[in-house]
Image 1 (cartoon, rainbow, N blue to C red):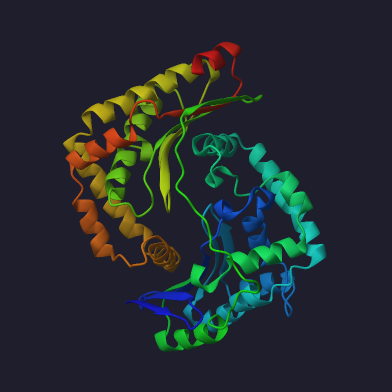
Image 2 (cartoon, rainbow, N blue to C red; image 1 turned 90 degrees about the vertical axis):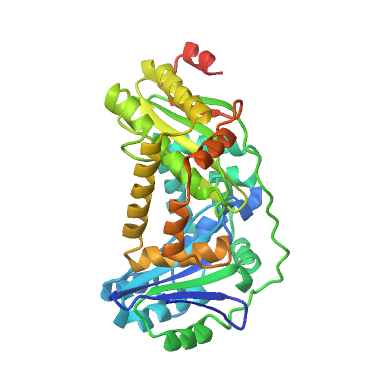
Length: 417
């Protein structure tokens, strides 16, 4: 059963009781991510996520780790371009202890100067790790290309220069500015007592107030850019990203776009996987994915291939994109993809963690809960005609962006331009 309550300070509490489960997952979602940073603050959202686990007034970082391990639970966090999330998953009988721990981290983290200096080195190593992973790196370069100078183009991890010189007061000011109750969602899914949970949440989180006055947050839609970016690097493969227009999260045509992406490259039965990997053996990894934000989105095709096959793989991707824009998809593809989407959706919502994620995203994106039955109905309602129309809109000529990373020759670089 879904319920929503707004705590006295404005934090939204969204819950879903699932008595058949033995677990419960609690997530604290802050509607602030890397796009909300200034250039001088690049990486602050992600760094703050790390610091919440580095000790409170009553617990050391080691105490925090041992306590969650003793419960047999999982506690972690993640940062995206639009949100920062802290969550804990435990057996239902351990929920009170888990809430006590999450509340302590959220309200009483110390942000100790020595811990900040140590964590700088950890995050700098994380940035370097991306530089050593060509699949991650080419996608980071590609995001910078398609988003241009928009804040969404910035790496979530930040830049080495901004991380190296950040100070404790800078982080606390950022928390005070962006961690406002009206920009927070508490999402809880699993087996719990509703009344007891609401009382605990009101006591532990309902009194939270920002420490500094906050200016209104500014976000504006991105303009999706075309073009070509190439970077030579000594690798065994060339890693490619081909970028196309997407749609915002929550858009009315999102299910048609999901179908389009799945048929193009989102599954092992997709056209690109079958044509490029299975039929021609040109790549081991070839896939496409959608990135949807609150006010914009992209579709990206990724492939890793031998240097001498770069132009051939790109030609095959371009050909399939043009074909889908001109002719849409086949009836059999539509039926197979809709069945696959419904199956994947139902399987993905079998855990309290995935249900918690869905609760929070629904609230942040649309402000309303969408039931599983409504989602299945929306998938069933997708028609081949609508998919064809979305393909024409997203795959319009002249909007394609190409990023290539690897042992590229001068001839190949010139050919891609």
